[in-house]
Every structure is written in C-alpha cells, then in structure tokens.
Length: 80
Image 1 (cartoon, rainbow, N blue to C red):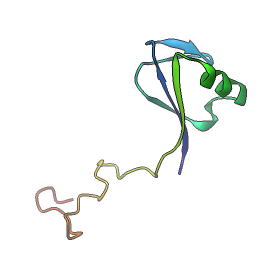
Image 2: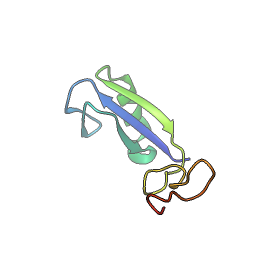
Image 3: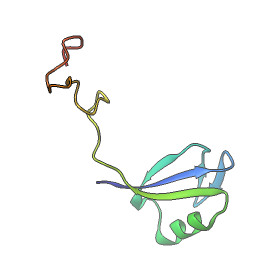
Image 4: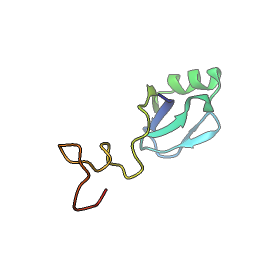
C-alpha cells in the first residue's frame, strides 16, 4: 500500500514547505517532504496533515469490481 501525505489548507493557497496548498485535500507521495518539512507542516495550524496508507489503485474504469455483477459476471450493458 502506497504511503501518502494528505494536506488540506484552511486558507486557499497557503504556502509552507516551498509550495502552495489548496483548500481541498491533496495527496503527495510520502517522500515529497523531508522530515523537517513534514514536522513544520504538521505544526502549522493553517494546515490539516494526515499520513495515510492507501489501498492499491482501483481498476482504470473506476469500478472496484471491474464491471462485474453480483454473480461475478461481466455486465451485459457495458460489456465490461
């Protein structure tokens, strides 16, 4: 499972660790920040910082079961 740092700014465009942070949750690879930068991000009251482990990526079509119906068969509507 890939590790990510999810940052949400309380102020649109707030800058910290050399980048602007939007007011919507934004994921960054865990190795984006140094330990010092991550500590500063976590200490910043204008940011909400979460360290997460995300499950492996879903299929490209966004359907977690790959377009299968309840019986595990491909959907006749989409052919997927």
